[in-house]
Image (tube, rainbow, N blue to C red; front, side, top):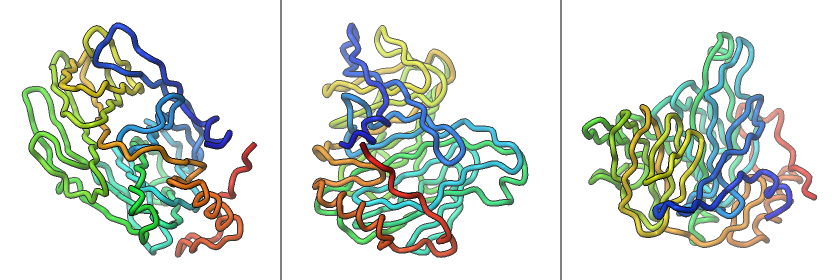
Length: 306
C-alpha cells in the first residue's frame, strides 16, 4: 500500500476483556466532494472484512441551498462499489452511460472490473433547497477470476430487498443471505451486508459468517461487557454466535463474508497484482479510460504519492 493510502487509514485497536471482539475501529475524517465522511476501512491492522476493503459513512450532513455533493469523474478497477442511502439523493453517472438517482433504501452496485469511470453529484432540484444527505459507501474486492471482468451497473429497488421483523428489531438483507432470506443483489463470492434497527433494551443474535464486522450508524450496543459507541466498527473473532443489546434505539450494519486474501490498494484501484494498479494509474494519467457521457468536462487527477 502506498504512503498516500496509508495516510487515509482509520485507527484500529485491540480490545481486551471481551472474548467476542478481535478489534474496534475508530473513524478517521476525510474530505470528499465538499463534505466530510467518516472512514472506517481500510484501517491500520485491519485491511478488510470478508471481501469488503473500504467503508465510508457519509453524514448525516446538512447542506445549505446552493451546496451539495459534487464528486467529479474518477476511475476504478478490480472492485465493486455499493452505495446505500438513509436520506437524500445522489445522481450516479458512469462511463457505461448509466444515469440514475440513488434513493434511500435502494442498492446501487457498480462493478468496475477492468475499468470504469463515474461521478456522484447532486442535481439542482436538490441543491436549490437546504437538504440532508446520509448514507454508506462501501467497496468490495472482486475475486481474482472476476477482477478484470467487463464493467457493469446493477440497481435494486428497496422493495425488492427482503426485510425480516423480530420482536423489537428489523433486519434488511442488503447483500447475501441471513435469517433465512436471500438478497437478489449480485455477488461474486460469499458476501454479507445487513441493516438492523434495534429498539433500546432489545438483544439480537448476529448471523454466523467466516468474517464478520458490525458498524454502529447511530446509537450504541453492549457486546458482553464492552459498549460499542456510534461511528465505531467491531471486528468479531472467528467463532461467532454473538448477541448484542441496544443501549438506545440503534441502527447498525453487518458486513462480512469469506476472505479473498490480501489485495493491493491505491487511490481508487484494488488488485491482486500491483502491476494492474500501475497500469491503471498510467491509463488515467494519459486519459485512456472512457468518458462519462454528459459529465466529461472535468475529472479528478491522479494524486501524487510520496
